[in-house]
Image (cartoon, rainbow, N blue to C red; front, side, top):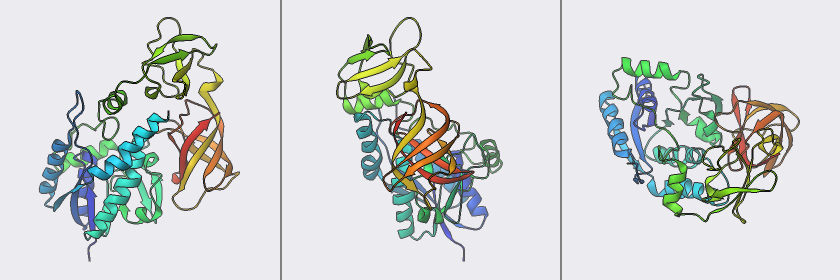
Amino acid sequence: MAKTVFVGMSGGVDSSLSAALLKEQGYKVVGVYMKNWTRDLPGFVCPWKEDYHDAKTVAVQLGIPFRLFDFETEYRQAVVDYMIEGYKQGLTPNPDIMCNQEIKFKLFLNTALQQGADMIATGHYARTLDGRLYKGKDDNKDQSYFLYRISQDALQHTLFPVGELSKDQVRAEAARRQLITAAKRDSQGICFVGEVGIRQFLLNELGEQSPGQIIDQSGRAVGTHDGAIFYTIGQRHGLNVGGGLPYYVTNKDMAKNIVYVTTDINDAKLWSTRVDLINPWWINVPPKAGKEYMVKTRYRSASVASTILDITKDKLSLSLSEEVRAVSPGQSAVIYDQDQVLGGGIILKGE
């Protein structure tokens, strides 16, 4: 008997083709739009109605049932509030990772199973086999970094139909099937902020922040910032400190409302060969101390060979084989054994 798969359809081409491929493979497919965020922001109209319409239209094209799951309240609490609290503490949190952990691969999965699904599927560029997570075949689009905090059990109930394809192949296959989303532009930015930018979002949520000093590597005040909350380690643009060499953010003191900067791109405060992590999460089994793995300290960073110095239930430390710039507290470091994602943790500090 054919398995029933609920496909998270965002209104984009990746999830549209995922639904089409699964139907062709003989699954009983149900399309689901997750209504997570509907609020407009200054200068930005939330595109959820358009995305919902596109997802529903594709479902009609494919001849599959279509449902809407309203997760807006849970999403606000688990993802948006998490992100805002992180920024208030001076961190640079990653809401997309939390969305996958708490919404897509927990709330959506559990709701789907309760409503008769055997499996769920999404349009992520990743692969899964026997409860293990692997990189997507397209290195440029691989999204396994954002999925490292989902569980082995969730993976055993999950399909990633486009994980073996490149983005160009996905668009070509969608066009061949005449899906209306085949040429639709990919969404940009943070999952719910869209193209507004995090600064504008935080301003809208928290209001104007208290200005404070910008202090350079010699201890000299070189300017004034409009809120330490808006700055992240390694940031170069948006400092509004005129003249001479560019400045880079090296640290923040939230209690004193000070942003520390340097003009020296080789400043030791910008580079790390050790990273301390908290809240580690392992999909299957923890990695071994003393063994070398590959690690990514942000989504678009290159993988770097690293050795686990020590590991406990609550934290671990990594020794990196080469210097990594702008390791930012609140971001995630994800650990790989070749193409397999072992897990990772939240960055506490780099040094």
